[in-house]
Image (cartoon, rainbow, N blue to C red):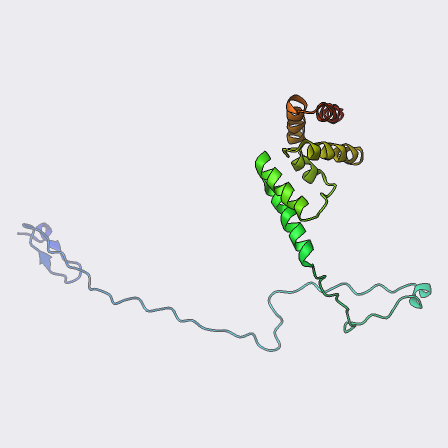
Length: 194
Protein backbone atom coordinates (compact mmCIF):
# COMPACT_ATOMS: atom_id res chain seq x y z
CA UNK A 1 0.00 0.00 0.00
CA UNK A 2 1.13 3.40 -0.76
CA UNK A 3 1.07 6.33 1.55
CA UNK A 4 -1.76 7.89 -0.33
CA UNK A 5 -4.11 5.02 0.39
CA UNK A 6 -3.71 5.35 4.15
CA UNK A 7 -5.22 8.17 6.10
CA UNK A 8 -2.98 9.77 8.61
CA UNK A 9 -4.06 10.26 12.18
CA UNK A 10 -3.52 13.97 12.78
CA UNK A 11 -2.77 13.56 16.50
CA UNK A 12 -0.34 10.70 16.44
CA UNK A 13 1.01 11.07 12.97
CA UNK A 14 0.45 7.34 12.34
CA UNK A 15 -1.46 6.08 9.39
CA UNK A 16 -4.77 4.28 9.93
CA UNK A 17 -5.65 1.21 7.95
CA UNK A 18 -8.13 1.97 5.17
CA UNK A 19 -10.18 -1.11 5.69
CA UNK A 20 -12.58 -1.48 8.60
CA UNK A 21 -14.11 1.15 10.81
CA UNK A 22 -12.01 4.06 11.87
CA UNK A 23 -11.20 4.04 15.50
CA UNK A 24 -12.86 6.97 17.19
CA UNK A 25 -11.50 8.37 20.32
CA UNK A 26 -13.72 9.73 23.03
CA UNK A 27 -12.69 13.18 24.23
CA UNK A 28 -11.52 13.17 27.81
CA UNK A 29 -14.24 14.02 30.30
CA UNK A 30 -14.09 17.38 31.90
CA UNK A 31 -14.87 18.02 35.51
CA UNK A 32 -17.69 20.35 36.51
CA UNK A 33 -17.23 23.96 35.52
CA UNK A 34 -15.84 26.11 38.29
CA UNK A 35 -18.31 28.47 39.94
CA UNK A 36 -17.87 32.12 39.06
CA UNK A 37 -16.17 34.26 41.60
CA UNK A 38 -18.34 36.90 43.18
CA UNK A 39 -16.60 40.06 44.12
CA UNK A 40 -18.07 42.84 46.15
CA UNK A 41 -16.91 46.24 45.13
CA UNK A 42 -17.15 49.32 47.24
CA UNK A 43 -17.13 52.79 45.91
CA UNK A 44 -14.22 54.85 47.17
CA UNK A 45 -15.20 57.44 49.71
CA UNK A 46 -14.47 60.35 47.43
CA UNK A 47 -16.16 58.99 44.30
CA UNK A 48 -19.54 60.44 43.36
CA UNK A 49 -22.50 58.05 43.17
CA UNK A 50 -23.31 56.58 39.78
CA UNK A 51 -26.91 57.77 39.80
CA UNK A 52 -27.25 61.49 40.18
CA UNK A 53 -30.32 62.87 41.79
CA UNK A 54 -31.92 66.05 40.64
CA UNK A 55 -31.36 68.73 43.21
CA UNK A 56 -34.28 70.98 44.10
CA UNK A 57 -34.25 74.39 42.54
CA UNK A 58 -32.99 77.13 44.83
CA UNK A 59 -35.79 79.17 46.37
CA UNK A 60 -36.69 82.33 44.53
CA UNK A 61 -36.08 85.51 46.49
CA UNK A 62 -39.27 87.21 47.66
CA UNK A 63 -39.96 90.84 46.84
CA UNK A 64 -39.09 93.24 49.64
CA UNK A 65 -42.76 93.90 50.46
CA UNK A 66 -43.44 90.19 51.06
CA UNK A 67 -40.36 89.53 53.18
CA UNK A 68 -41.90 90.90 56.35
CA UNK A 69 -45.19 89.05 55.81
CA UNK A 70 -43.66 85.67 54.94
CA UNK A 71 -42.94 83.37 57.90
CA UNK A 72 -39.44 82.04 58.21
CA UNK A 73 -39.44 78.36 57.29
CA UNK A 74 -36.58 76.05 58.04
CA UNK A 75 -35.99 72.40 57.31
CA UNK A 76 -36.45 71.55 60.94
CA UNK A 77 -39.72 73.38 61.40
CA UNK A 78 -42.20 71.42 63.46
CA UNK A 79 -45.15 70.03 61.60
CA UNK A 80 -48.41 69.31 63.33
CA UNK A 81 -50.15 66.25 62.03
CA UNK A 82 -53.67 65.65 63.19
CA UNK A 83 -54.63 62.25 64.50
CA UNK A 84 -57.01 60.33 62.27
CA UNK A 85 -60.58 60.96 63.20
CA UNK A 86 -62.03 58.11 65.15
CA UNK A 87 -65.20 56.67 63.76
CA UNK A 88 -67.81 55.56 66.22
CA UNK A 89 -69.63 52.26 66.01
CA UNK A 90 -72.86 53.70 64.59
CA UNK A 91 -70.98 55.29 61.68
CA UNK A 92 -69.19 52.01 60.98
CA UNK A 93 -72.53 50.21 61.02
CA UNK A 94 -74.05 52.80 58.67
CA UNK A 95 -71.15 52.44 56.21
CA UNK A 96 -71.40 48.66 56.34
CA UNK A 97 -75.14 48.64 55.69
CA UNK A 98 -74.80 51.21 52.90
CA UNK A 99 -72.08 49.19 51.15
CA UNK A 100 -74.26 46.10 51.50
CA UNK A 101 -77.11 47.98 49.82
CA UNK A 102 -74.91 49.23 46.98
CA UNK A 103 -73.45 45.76 46.34
CA UNK A 104 -76.79 43.94 46.39
CA UNK A 105 -78.20 42.58 43.13
CA UNK A 106 -81.85 41.93 42.39
CA UNK A 107 -85.05 43.22 43.99
CA UNK A 108 -85.09 40.75 46.89
CA UNK A 109 -81.52 41.51 47.96
CA UNK A 110 -82.04 45.28 47.56
CA UNK A 111 -85.20 45.12 49.66
CA UNK A 112 -83.46 43.18 52.46
CA UNK A 113 -80.46 45.53 52.48
CA UNK A 114 -82.62 48.67 52.38
CA UNK A 115 -84.83 47.40 55.20
CA UNK A 116 -81.75 46.61 57.31
CA UNK A 117 -80.44 50.13 56.64
CA UNK A 118 -83.80 51.65 57.66
CA UNK A 119 -83.98 49.40 60.73
CA UNK A 120 -80.56 50.72 61.78
CA UNK A 121 -82.19 54.16 62.10
CA UNK A 122 -80.44 55.77 59.14
CA UNK A 123 -81.86 57.97 56.37
CA UNK A 124 -80.85 57.12 52.82
CA UNK A 125 -78.26 59.55 51.40
CA UNK A 126 -79.37 61.71 48.52
CA UNK A 127 -76.96 60.22 46.00
CA UNK A 128 -77.87 58.88 42.59
CA UNK A 129 -76.26 55.47 43.14
CA UNK A 130 -78.23 54.84 46.33
CA UNK A 131 -81.53 56.15 44.98
CA UNK A 132 -81.06 54.16 41.77
CA UNK A 133 -80.73 50.99 43.85
CA UNK A 134 -83.90 51.90 45.75
CA UNK A 135 -85.86 51.81 42.48
CA UNK A 136 -85.67 48.00 42.77
CA UNK A 137 -87.31 47.95 46.23
CA UNK A 138 -90.52 45.90 46.61
CA UNK A 139 -92.26 48.63 48.62
CA UNK A 140 -93.66 51.24 46.22
CA UNK A 141 -93.55 53.93 48.92
CA UNK A 142 -89.74 53.62 48.99
CA UNK A 143 -89.66 53.63 45.19
CA UNK A 144 -91.84 56.74 45.03
CA UNK A 145 -89.60 58.54 47.55
CA UNK A 146 -86.53 57.55 45.51
CA UNK A 147 -88.16 58.91 42.33
CA UNK A 148 -88.74 62.24 44.08
CA UNK A 149 -85.12 62.46 45.22
CA UNK A 150 -83.85 61.46 41.77
CA UNK A 151 -85.98 64.15 40.13
CA UNK A 152 -84.37 66.78 42.37
CA UNK A 153 -80.87 65.36 41.80
CA UNK A 154 -81.22 65.37 38.01
CA UNK A 155 -81.87 69.12 38.09
CA UNK A 156 -78.37 69.58 39.57
CA UNK A 157 -76.26 66.81 37.99
CA UNK A 158 -76.08 64.53 34.97
CA UNK A 159 -77.49 61.01 35.32
CA UNK A 160 -75.14 58.13 36.07
CA UNK A 161 -75.60 54.63 34.64
CA UNK A 162 -78.07 55.93 32.06
CA UNK A 163 -79.01 52.56 30.48
CA UNK A 164 -79.72 51.00 33.88
CA UNK A 165 -81.61 54.11 34.94
CA UNK A 166 -83.85 54.01 31.86
CA UNK A 167 -84.44 50.28 32.19
CA UNK A 168 -85.63 50.57 35.79
CA UNK A 169 -87.86 53.53 34.97
CA UNK A 170 -89.40 51.64 32.03
CA UNK A 171 -90.07 48.63 34.27
CA UNK A 172 -91.75 50.90 36.84
CA UNK A 173 -93.74 52.72 34.17
CA UNK A 174 -95.08 49.43 32.82
CA UNK A 175 -95.49 47.33 35.94
CA UNK A 176 -95.98 49.50 39.04
CA UNK A 177 -99.21 48.90 40.96
CA UNK A 178 -99.93 52.51 41.92
CA UNK A 179 -100.78 55.13 39.30
CA UNK A 180 -98.68 57.78 41.07
CA UNK A 181 -95.53 55.63 40.79
CA UNK A 182 -96.21 54.95 37.09
CA UNK A 183 -96.74 58.67 36.41
CA UNK A 184 -93.55 59.72 38.26
CA UNK A 185 -91.49 57.07 36.46
CA UNK A 186 -92.87 58.17 33.05
CA UNK A 187 -92.14 61.83 33.83
CA UNK A 188 -88.59 61.10 34.98
CA UNK A 189 -88.03 58.96 31.90
CA UNK A 190 -89.08 61.88 29.68
CA UNK A 191 -86.62 64.11 31.55
CA UNK A 192 -83.81 61.61 30.91
CA UNK A 193 -84.50 61.57 27.17
CA UNK A 194 -84.15 65.36 26.88
